[in-house]
Image (cartoon, rainbow, N blue to C red; front, side, top):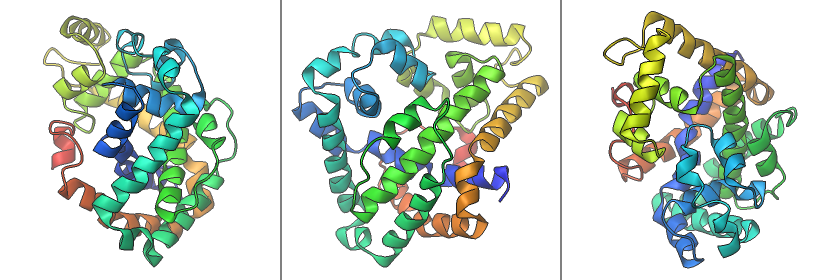
Length: 287
């Protein structure tokens, strides 16, 4: 198993993790518990870290504007404790997977096999050095239902990879907004306006960062990646793949291919049911 194959496997399964942030069951459950609006996302994803402040959430999520997070965190913890938030999320995921895929799929032989394969990979993560968000999720108790085991394992893999991705971005000297802009410019990230608004950046902040990237010859005058910018993004992805290889290597190339084969119809079912917002995907993803 080489690093690029492992990276492709991880990206192919990304949406099965991300579904947690977009299904109404999650939002409704957290709103019922007293949270509102964007606090549901920030508190929901950060809950395994405990009752941390806005600085920790900004650092571990990386490309969000702290001005967006600070009014919501740590205030959310006084409304709903992190432990309760995680209970709500797993109940919501159970309901969402049942609605979107069906109870029969959730209890199927294929789901059991996929959960086992994803668990082998997740349990193959060698350690938590420098991986704060992964480490927080790794301390949670594993669920027992196969579809929730699959989600939990994919989440461990995703946050482990994400922590390494931040290290790669730091190596490339790209701060949060610069990482977001350059990823959007590849065509594989969020569309520009979705990215800017979703991550809480003003037009002025975005334009200033674009200008700074142009001064560094990472972007051209049209906002597209220069050859130097493309090299930097390639370096970032290569480092990310290298740092995330170990768990996929423990599963093996055949195991990873089988997991992607099993899970792809479920990913496609989520896309077909318009789980994800319009304008979320870049132009390259749509091709």
